[in-house]
Amino acid sequence: MPAMPDPAAHSTAAPPAVDAATVVLVRDGDDGALQVCLLERHIDSDFAGGAFVFPGGKVDVQDRELPAARHRGADLAEWQPLLGAPDRATTLGLLAAAVRECFEEAGVLLARDEHGRRLTADVLARPSFVDARRRLASRDERFDWRPWLEAEGLVLDLGALALWSWWVTPEGQHKRFDTRFLVAALPPTQQAAEDEVETTSLRWLSPQQALDAHAAGEVNVIYPTRRNLRDLATFPTVDRLLAAAREGRVDQRRIQPTVVRVDGQVMVQHPDGDAPEVI
Image (cartoon, rainbow, N blue to C red):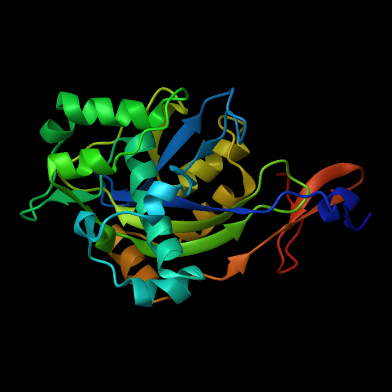
């Protein structure tokens, strides 16, 4: 039976999609091949519980209002049309949220000190850094990290980011995100680790290994992550991937799938008309 639109997908009560940012953190493995960082979301999470995803989350007010002294490396006027942002504050918010969420969920901080020096694993192991990450991840506290950034003399390295893709949650879902996927290389002086609050495990896999693990039922990878992994799998190394993203040689369109029913099963349909898939 052909795919038919799901009436729920067009509900007038559908919540709006909120701005969010995700970081596709990449490195070259020991064999020189591209690997991606995937985090297993806590099973009790109210979005994609138990699924393997890239680190990310919604934009907060603190991201939009980050002081100029606390970030460098990004021309916001150039980034604004790339991100489809209506203003400078939204542009900054998306980039800053990406860095904040990467630190919170994966323990990787795309920042330098005020002298331009890279952060190391030893620095990130200091009590102040451990406590800041814990407070960002806490479900009981709203932690504004801007005073902490200033106290530690940290400057977010927004130049480490490149736009990868742009996905919007289909209408009909209980939570919807307007998500910009940004790609960044793992800093050579840092290591990644799950936060044990939102995420419970972390794996470095090649994009194809992640897809194969999902196909074998070993892990659950949601639809937009799978689609991004398929595109990531076409690049052999970090350098090739970052160059393509920075030069706009990847699909950076705003993609909003639709929810459909196929033989009674709820599935998701890419706007390009690809075969429906499970969500």
